[in-house]
Amino acid sequence: MARIKIDMPDHYTFTTELPVRISDINYGGHLGNDAVLSMIHEARIRFLNYYHYTELDVEGAGIIMTDSAIVYRAEGFHGDMIQLDVTVGDFNKYGCDIYYVLSNKKTAAEIAHAKTGIVFFDYEERKVIPVPEGFKASMEKDA
Ligand SMILES: CC(C)(COP(=O)(O)OP(=O)(O)OC[C@H]1O[C@@H](n2cnc3c(N)ncnc32)[C@H](O)[C@@H]1OP(=O)(O)O)[C@@H](O)C(=O)NCCC(=O)NCCSC(=O)c1ccc(O)cc1
Image 1 (cartoon, rainbow, N blue to C red):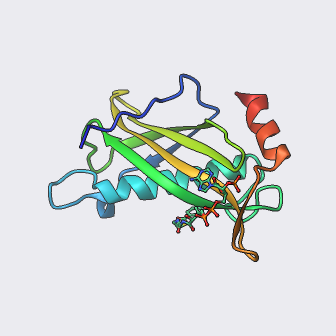
Image 2: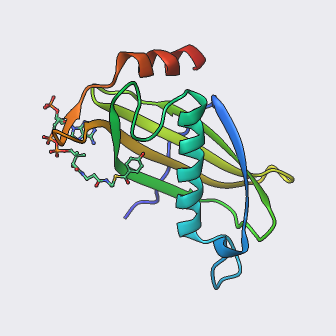
């Protein structure tokens, strides 16, 4: 299979930080691949909260994850402070992609590129629904 290359945006609308905890370290002595997925989950929640949303309530709508991709660019180690830059893009009728750049705050070395695809979802009807206009407008305002 071809190497994954994520076409990352140039501009990010939200930044947060997370330390590499001892529980994020795997038997290779470095930041585990699964821990990176957890870190982007935390970053996504903080990103949504910044816009007064939650994963269950974005303008009254829920979201569901349709895909995820991570490119591991450099190792992370216990005690490193990781900066996570987040933005959204590539809107379609039902959803968009959320992009994440993880970098070592001290050295600026990029640790990972990641993106998660989402669609808006009515959890009661269990069906895909269009992107709420208010969400798109909030995202475009800061783009
Ligand atoms: C994504 C799905 C809901 C799509 O449902 P389907 O029944 O296949 O959709 P349909 O084929 O009927 O398509 C309905 C419409 O949606 C559109 N659609 C379907 N998939 C997509 C994607 N991926 N992108 C854009 N549009 C899509 C499709 O084109 C149809 O459009 P119209 O033709 O215009 O009607 C379904 O594939 C699914 O349930 N996948 C599993 C999702 C899942 O379990 N994800 C992991 C758990 S959720 C999660 O981890 C998480 C959620 C939220 C968080 O904040 C965090 C984590």
